[in-house]
Image 1: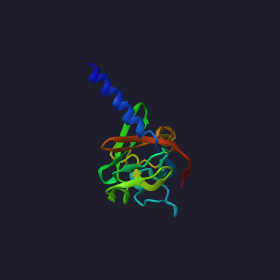
Image 2: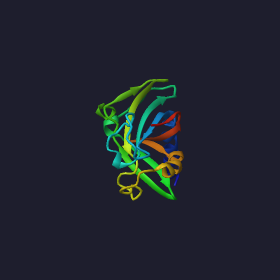
Image 3: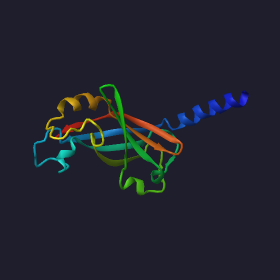
Image 4: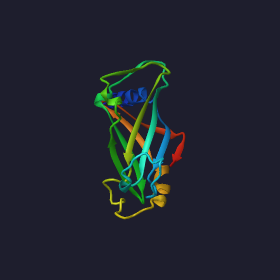
Length: 164
């Protein structure tokens, strides 16, 4: 029994050691909410619905050096809509090309991710031209989660949202 309790304590201590990594969405750029062509649209595949481009920062706020293993990691993108949870894996190129990334105390790394938000869900409707109401419900629930072998942490905030 005492080994069980000790194991639980060690798990909590281990997880807390990585709570000093902060994932922040520096800017979230949303395009293709409506099916109107614009010279500012990021993605030309407008029939795939809203597209999100995220500029993110992973920051080490601890006093020690932390090693990340991007090539063994993935990002999960989560949101809720009408009580249902949606989750997708996103690849952050060229971030995942790194075998190891050493983040010293106070250091950060910036990366870029993009996803067609509704592709693969029943929310993407053929011939629908306006997803404004869906986006108003989805955007406040967005979370980005970094996962690797023994490290999991999620986005804490979205600093700026730009809709084009």
